[in-house]
Length: 378
Image (cartoon, rainbow, N blue to C red):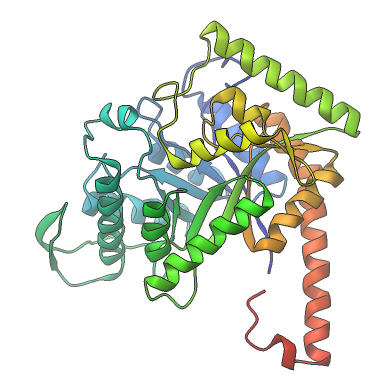
């Protein structure tokens, strides 16, 4: 099965290591970064969400109108708009992009960050709201007759949309989280389940948890799995590790000076970040190339574990995750534009070529002796 690559659609050039050079929404940079992904083999880019950040749906529409192939993963928090309104927004964006939209629903892992926009539900309440929200959005996308809804979090009467997605029956829905509540909700309703990069053993455990949740919800096929990393690559192993240590030093310096801080407070509340911090506490290096000091330096802030090495080393590490059942690789460097280009030029082709070689070998083996391959998913 082909592997897909997800990059970042940042609206400025700032990162944990570098201050931004212009405003929060730098229109020219936003387009340059998106086109760099489109021109260098990436499949889609993520428009992330933050309480004070530029509104991602508008930025996504801008990029959709100025690219031709790049797919869009739009992050959305269910507390910021009513589901009927959001469903229309998503359908309109899918029309603008000619069917290139996937929606990533964020339940919210930090109470303080959620409260900045008026969301005072508990974490468990947020998960039940997200699940109900997604179910409503899907109904709006697919039903052409008016319907009523009365649930735990939303109530309306006689709603019918007049705009529908290009993708039929609907765009894919992405979901993430590393707690039992997240597995249960995402396993039940998501097409794609997003995880942060952890060691192979822990990633395999999370994949099994998602599959079990999907099975418990009565699904015959579980969500596709996405895993996210911060690649640090260079022409030699020595240069890559020198770059890695410079990266961590820059993160620590900016954090110590107050120039960069962990959003929503210093201690992580969400299970995913807590897992990253715990893994970093147990060791710096895992498996072929996973390196945890970047996560430790940020306090487990979001996607923060690195893969360090030459393009060949990083590609081999990504293939290890592919062998676990990972379908989508999310990658974001610290020099957003330069790293997107380098990763696209030097890593993506290696992974795609090896996956294609394996798929061809399996197809040939299946043609020669189909019995062992009957019913196989990969």
